[in-house]
Image (cartoon, rainbow, N blue to C red; front, side, top):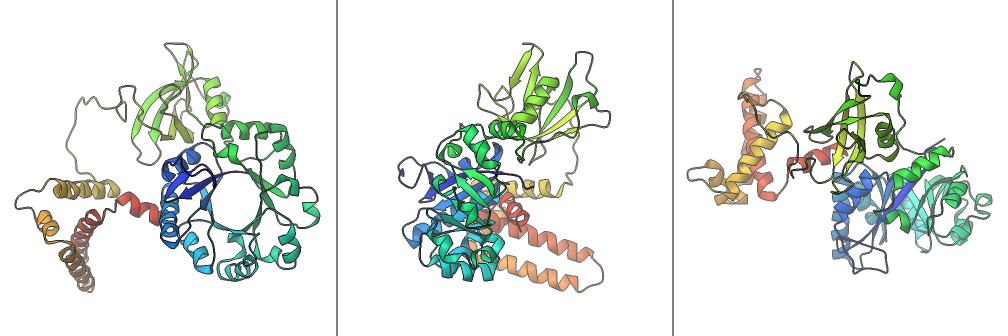
Length: 426
């Protein structure tokens, strides 16, 4: 049995997130909103393009691309899809699925064309009436992966019309109603305006649904508290690490109750030794830590928590609690990404704070054409060097190329995070 999906929708207007297709005034950053959904237990995000012209359409596609480059939750793209090119743009922007509007007459032909080109597993259709199903039932099952049902009144009798699984848009939060419809094998999940509210606790709902036997994509512990070895106070020290950068953020303590709460809610919950009670990190500051993984060490007496940190980890306002240097020995950094980031930072600083006699500043002063010329020259040098049997010259030329490439990256505002995010989704 597949997991049931909890689906949020981001409506995009002029590259910004708005509340709904009819409420366009209250705008917010799309990436910030997507990041909240990413952390809070949402399983899929529908990115809905509300553009009215080609220029805005391109701006919204770029916003969707930015979402997919920075979050882990899969996305489906929809809205303003008129031709095959629009389907391609959404898929190339990182969406795993595209939603076509079943109320438009041209959708039938577009489904056939898009399914043949990109595969039925990438095609969804939204329905507000069952008319489309009657017109297309002969070919729909072979060309569409899933349906998005926009009106719950269509559910009655829908299973007699089609075997295609569907996501249902539920207008208001009603746990018993949601529990009832999710028991249907054909219903893959739910969407709805209440799920778009960032204050809604999706992880809690998923846990409650799991308690009722609904298979949800939430944390399932492989170890019990009894498998661990707490100290004499019944506590286990927990080292907290940023899941992306690897930076150690803080150390705190867990007891059995706080560990269970962490697993259930997806938010790091600790036991305060000074107050002798549970505390959810960020409950007062808003600097929540969303769980990515919990791992016990070899002795089962320490936990490593990898988290998505909102804001800063330390109560002093520092990003990490570890900033009071005791001793430090100079060493050569050999972590590849850290080396790239350090060199990039130096190049970026040269651009912001020019230094007389700096070759880097010479390149920036000469402009983009000079930088591009050097990148091309260094690429050619790699090709020539690689023809030699020894690798030393190749290594040297690659290093030269990477330096000049980073100058180009700084000039164009492209970061290593941008590049690695792009590579990760390929």
